[in-house]
Image: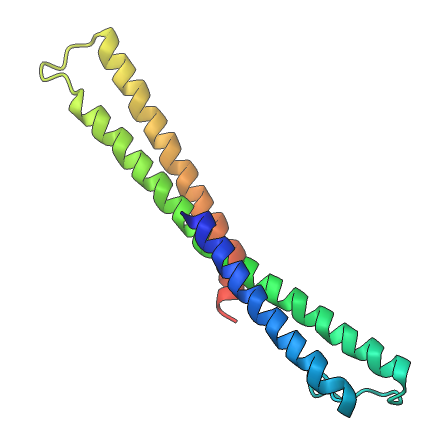
Amino acid sequence: MWRYWSRAFLVVTESVLVTTVSTSIVNDPPNRGMFYDTYLPCDSSTIGYWTSYVFQIIAHVFGSLVNVAYDTLIPGLILKICAQLSILEHRLDLVSKDVDPYGQLTKAKKEKSNKVTECVKHHLQILQLDARTNKVFSVVMHL
């Protein structure tokens, strides 16, 4: 489902980009206008104009791709962490249903103990992923 929304967001963003660039190509060159208003320290000769114009369009394309990547990466990582927590919850629920009411030390109890150990390790891995995600993206989110 998340892949569908990411691709849909990419298609919509790139459609807007194509429309904007197409409109700019039709309207700007006859008047020597630029995609973005900018000061260029060169003359407005044909080669200088087109070089700057193409550079601005390429920058706009890459900017839109970075926007899509950023806007889908962080929610994707958050959803991955949430999914892992749901898996852990399910595993712990299965372990709690298999509790021996008499508490005898049996082979089954040792297996349950191993399952709990695996759940604890899984939980620690989820926390590590969360900490890494926060460490990497918190700087960007606060800007």
